[in-house]
Length: 55
Picture 1: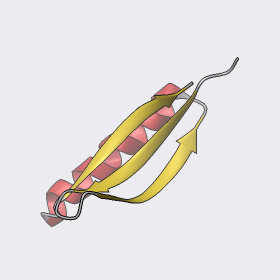
Picture 2 (picture 1 turned 90 degrees about the horizontal axis):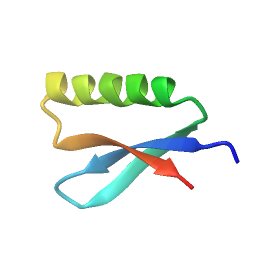
Picture 3 (picture 1 turned 30 degrees about the vertical axis):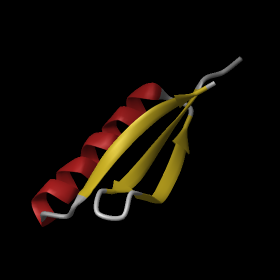
Picture 4 (picture 1 turned 135 degrees about the vertical axis):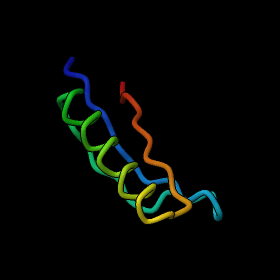
């Protein structure tokens, strides 16, 4: 079975997931997670980009 990965935006103040995107390539998912996190850090947003493997 092919693995998939979800990258999502977690809003720290509310504890809610804002959006998500599913990837079938782990490297693409890791790159998207890093891109989102850099944006949040640059903009000083209270968000975290997380990646989870879907089974």
